[in-house]
Amino acid sequence: MNINRRRGAIAFFITLGALLVGLSVGLSFGWIILNDRAVALAVVGVILFSLLIAGVVLNTVFLVREIRRNERQDSFLNAVSHELKTPIASTRLYLETLQRRPVEEEQRQQFYKIMLADSDRLLATVEQVLKAGELGQRHRQQNRTLVEIEPLLADCIQVTLQRYHLAPESITLDAAPEDAPLRVLGIAEDLRTAIINVLDNAVKYSPDGVHVRCSLAIARPNSMTLRIADRGMGLPENQDKRIFRRFYRVPGRSTARIRGTGLGLFLVRNIVRQHSGHVKASSPGPGLGTTVTFTLPLAAPATGPELP
Image 1 (tube, rainbow, N blue to C red):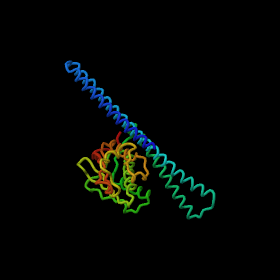
Image 2 (cartoon, one colour):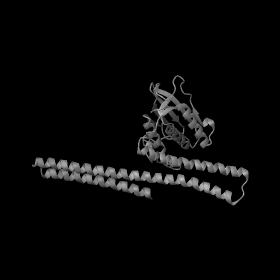
Image 3 (cartoon, rainbow, N blue to C red):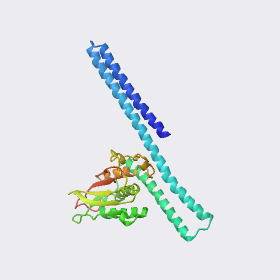
Image 4 (cartoon, rainbow, N blue to C red):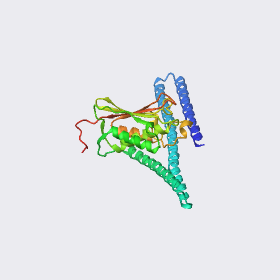
């Protein structure tokens, strides 16, 4: 109901803005025709009416943007509430079961496993929200160190495989070139967050089977690329840049049932930018998979282990 109400409000403001612009244009030309001999007054009138039209257009655009922003924020709050309440309710249910009646050891261990997975899910959601606020407020001033990208990526792959109980062949890593070490100057914790967020998306948006391929390469003498390609749901047209916005989630019934907060790729973009790099997403179309590519500057050979 709220979504329909907002869509009605958007349509109302667009219609109102169009009517006001049309009215202003009509009055402007009518006034000029009636005062065709007063050239100076006509010019002043045209300028004033042009300013009025520009103000109406800007006001309409601003209102529509605010309505859409509020809609994304409400969707984010609903998603976060779900992500927080679901694992808590699940854990509470299993704890109450263990408290009320005796449970066989095998089933008890299964309950422990599920509760641990729920706590990991809860912790991941909390950390994601906290990091989004941290990165959105200011540029991080932490000391940066030399980070070896290949072992970091391999560790992120193992974490994702364990988190989703996947077979080792579900996520593969192509061997990096041996002629040059792929090292960047940065914050290992943040880079780990960015890579895991992309891997999480690749798994979640592959409902028919996870087939993810990771690769590293030298793009130019002073930069490297990290590609994470999946064969999942892909992206509709004109979504490759929007998915990096805060709270944004690709619309559609097929993606609505997939849990998420709309913060993952926003974090990825900000982390990569703060490492003087850029990230992009590409997809041949829906159902044809998605490739996310990081481009990061390589650390200079003479760079020390840590910035002062």
